[in-house]
Image 1 (cartoon, rainbow, N blue to C red):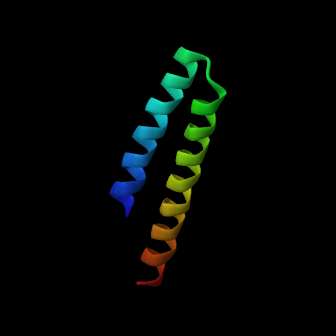
Image 2: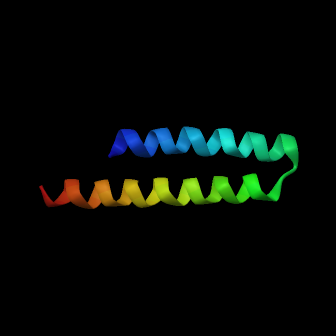
Amino acid sequence: MLALALVLSLIGFIALLVALYLGSVLWAWVCVGIAAAGIILFVTDLVVSKRR
């Protein structure tokens, strides 16, 4: 899951660059959604690994 969180952070960064380049609010919200999904995956992975 950590690798997936890292991939989501990369995709979110690319979406941020697209939002800045195009000046699009939609792309900015896509970036926020991807970042939130990455944070949720990271925290979930952290909690699961602490239980082991």
